Image 1 (cartoon, rainbow, N blue to C red):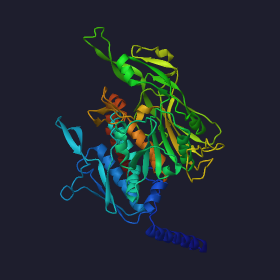
Image 2: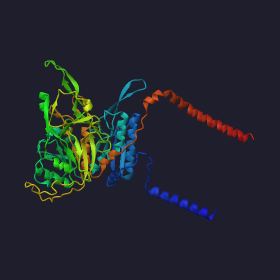
Image 3: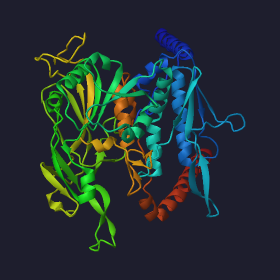
Image 4: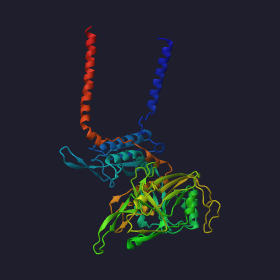
Length: 541
């Protein structure tokens, strides 16, 4: 062997040995999938690397599952295996004999057709219990959106697995529960009408309520402030407290109405005047890059309401009629706040306009109307007798109703003295540290109905019996505002769903069956004939 060949062989052997040592001491993984399905996000890796004790996970999704849930089960196990590469995350399946089901774990009945043609109900437990340092939390694995097909719900569930487990581990690692607060003092929605969202947010935060006071420093302990449908103007002192809270990096969820109206008057008399609502914060929001227009939005895609169409008052005849003042809002699939969130219902919404232009703020539309909308300037009158507007006049498309704004906001008090009633030692800032806010131009989005003293789910329409995505949108919005680690961005992970075209498969089933049977046999026959021909030529010479 030549010297050059010996050198090449020695180098090759050395590289193989080095690669073996590296693989022995460090796990090397390469994700070759198009959707980066097996790649954990940077926030997840950082979270796992900070763990100082093992995380234990019990999977209740086990047993005899149909193909869809087996896919979810396998994806869950693969996700936890990826977690285990970075940190000691240990998972095991539920054992009926040794383990007890937590109270939060309730089965989902899956209707399946058996071989004999009968339909059977199979209980499935799509949950996982995550334990760390003696604490645990039960997380649901299945996205259960009734407006989507089973395959779509399972695919969304697989997309959200990394975020679900990362958020659960993050919550268990927190030494102190973060605080948020509902602001009072301007006739905001009472506690009974935000009870549902308050209960849902209490899974992640300590939820308080209170007035602003005269010292913005009192707001520093709160990660997020929620302003839920105020009806009275804000004073200059209130605006100063909120402004300086934002300048210090605070986050605010504004849920506002651009107009004022009366549902009680509308229900009693069949009509109500609608006037612009002046909350004395238009200049403040303008400084933050948005403006809530004092107008009403109507949309063809809307909720129905029962209307008495009978001329005989003694014999009412209620029929469902489209209520164009209650649009069903579309959600953006490009934001982690609204990705995979179903339609959001609201009423008496107002349009939002982005202003400022070159202010360096990043603005993103979260909720918008459909492709057939129209705007009604105020003052105006809403009349139940006018239920058939000219659809041809609905010429607006995708009118923004909710917007997120990020960046370094400028203070409205940059060149002004603070109000005399303010007493604080906090230094006044004219420019904010990087922070974010969300503005929603319909107070009804956060409002839940109350029936017999019990709060109904927010986003639930009693007349149609449908549950809309208001709760998911609001929870995601607050988590997004309070998120400093970037975990909410994991919700943008996308897994491609390759569904079978059932219609085309049914129409061409005969051709598909013939190809599936004949093609493999033809290939085997061709290979056999080729081998026979080669052997015959070789041994007959």
